[in-house]
Image 1: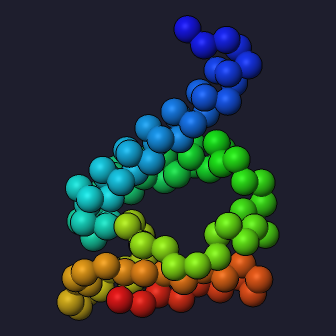
Image 2: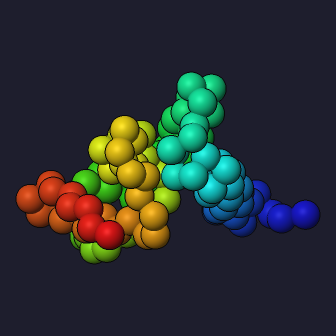
Length: 107
């Protein structure tokens, strides 16, 4: 058993890791959101909300930790997914810049 002080710091890390695994599993299952049912979309939103509450970075949009290129593993954006046309194949990278609050997608 962990002492209470250690448990205070370890428990959120375990919870975050479990939520991230569930999110990535659901993202893979739904092909980044392309085949997501309304129920799966709602489940994903709930998982994101839970993970956001455990974020150790306060005001993440003001943090330089967010800046850079990120793999976009899930989205609800029809245009990014290519719905109604040709679905996107391969990685989608999103460049985030918190200084001017922009995000740019590339493939």
